[in-house]
Length: 338
Image 1: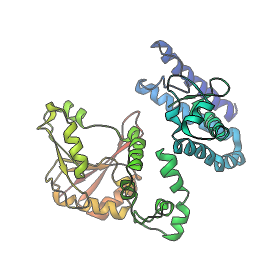
Image 2 (image 1 turned 60 degrees about the horizontal axis):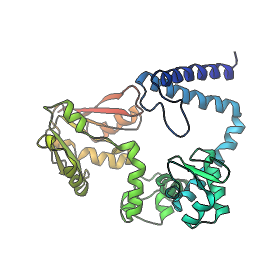
Image 3 (image 1 turned 60 degrees about the vertical axis):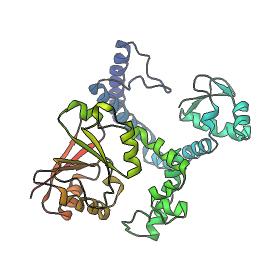
Image 4 (image 1 turned 180 degrees about the vertical axis):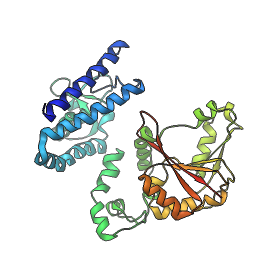
């Protein structure tokens, strides 16, 4: 059996399992415009991940080495069409539950119809919109295309200008935006960009310690963030959790004020900072930790984390990593040994 046939048969087997599940629970089959597998059991989420990975392998084999290299440089056109549509706020001119003529969208958005059609039809290739009938568009829904993608094209230029830099304000983002401020400071200058960033991150970062507090009634939780953020948290906290969940304004580049906690949980923090600044964050944590205190966070390889912990303080010992079934995020653990 050839590699192509073997992978294809594996894809077929996984697809049949997923289709059987949707049929058994009375769901419609998977579609480009809705996710019938979103709430599937963990074992089927693994099947789905395997299906995606195998499909990618099949595509790469079918393309061959030259085909893959030729395809990659042209992915910028996908971003280009999305950026055009986001810039002109086109999704807001297309109904979620119906279709609309291109001419009406162009008039409403104040964009040339011929130009709009070109970008819309390109986006339809990626199922961002659908052409339900000739000349009509339907919405299937720009931080990535407006902020991250343009900055990513300046990464090589930034590397040449600031080789091996650990500074957060010496990156492709700074060259693209002609600023000496860091990413977050620059976004804060423009409410629209800050809103766009928040919307772009929400699917990846949303979550709450409320579930943890409800599952463990004896647990006392202190949530730390910058003052403006914790004020919002206090406002939204359910009444039944007040007294067990509290909020504290804190800049992690200053010494940790909450002493002797059993666990210090950093969620999506050090992965945004170079080793130089991650070390500063950890060093500010050490004076607050007691023997047996645990620290955790995300990203880097396991050896990288072990080296980072040791460089901060030899008493901060790397324990290991854990990944929950069905999750793409790992928990990195270290314990303080006085």
